Image (cartoon, rainbow, N blue to C red):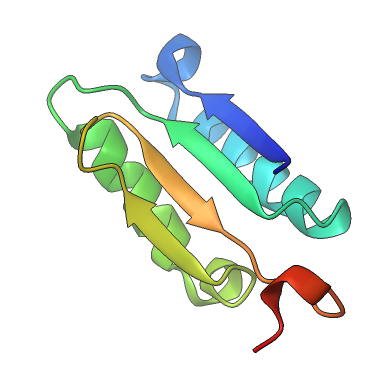
Length: 92
């Protein structure tokens, strides 16, 4: 399965760049019909992960993906699943 990986370690303290990177990766997944985005905010204090989850909860972003999965084995990782129209793998 194709996926996009976004590691936020490099820009963890740059709020505007974080938003730009998250928006870019969501748009790329939608435009290229990628079913999975892996976002790595890292473990740290948890503030960056909260920032990521707040971004993903915005109505204009939330309508673009199917569900979020917080990695049970790795607190510093979030998966965003997409269900693209006309994709046989996701038809019920």
